[in-house]
Length: 126
Image 1 (cartoon, one colour):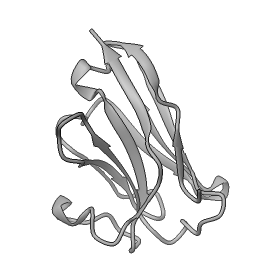
Image 2 (tube, one colour; image 1 turned 60 degrees about the vertical axis):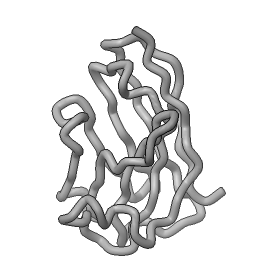
Image 3 (tube, one colour; image 1 turned 180 degrees about the vertical axis):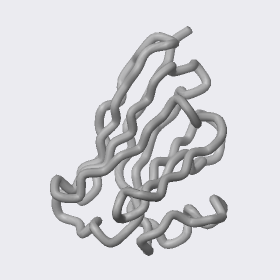
């Protein structure tokens, strides 16, 4: 597995989790990294993105102000700090490497030609 998400678990509403996405065997320096999630019975959605250099970021409205994406290219790892978690954040969270350095300006393009990693389950109890 070249891209592995970890850090999921069960947390109470209002709590925090930090997800990690490790890419030990993959080149990530020149590409955006994204976090996505898929709740039961729903389509996968793009929730956050960070550009190759870490300057540009994107958050979907539902996580803005609560989640923070970051990356350490030397460690080939991307992070998602999730605070003030809500039950509706319950989902399998996936990371992916994009095909270009910059995050898509149109979130609809966030799924094009990305390299998917395995997911990690986040469960937020009320």
